[in-house]
Image 1: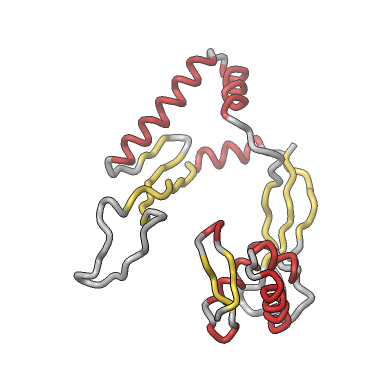
Image 2: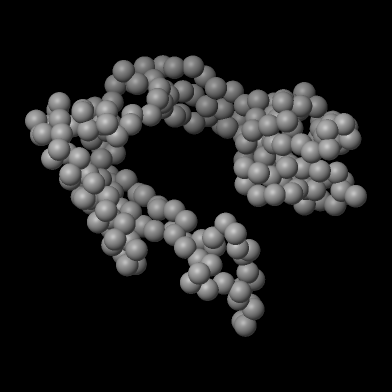
Length: 207
C-alpha cells in the first residue's frame, strides 16, 4: 500500500502562511529486470517477448524523435525531444549575426514526457493510500546577513565551499542553499563568487 506525504511549501504569495501539497512516498526504484518479471507474472508473456517489445519501442522512440517527431503512445503518453547547448559550449546571445552555435554545438539534452490521462486514471484506480509522515520546510536559525558572514568565515578557513557545506553551515535545505548561493554569487557586494558548473560548482571569496 502506498503512502502520501503532506509537504510544507514556501509561501509564494506573501500572505505569511505556508501552503501544503501532497506527494507519494517512493520506497525505491524498480529496475528493468524486476519490471519485466512483473510483466511476465501479470501478463502471461514470455520474458524474451517482453524484453523484445520494450527494447524495440525504446529504439523506435529514439529514431522518430531524432527525426523531429513527438510520439504519442496511447495509454502511456507523449514523448518530445528537448535541445540544448552541449556542456562544453557556452550559451550565445540572441542577436543577429552573433550566434556562435551550430549543429556541432547543439544536441538533444532531454526528453519531455506528458502522461496519458488514461494512465493517470488507471494508476489512481489501483492506488489505495494511507497517511505517511508530514514533511516541513527546513528553516535556518540565522538571518540572511548572518548566513553571508558564516559563508565568508568558512571560506577564509577552507578556500572553497560547496553547496552541501553551505547547507550544513546554515541549516538550509540543499534546494534553498543552491538558490541562495546562486543569488549571492551574482551580487558583487557579497564578496562571494562561483566557479565551475553543475555538480562541480564551488564558491570562493572574490579577490
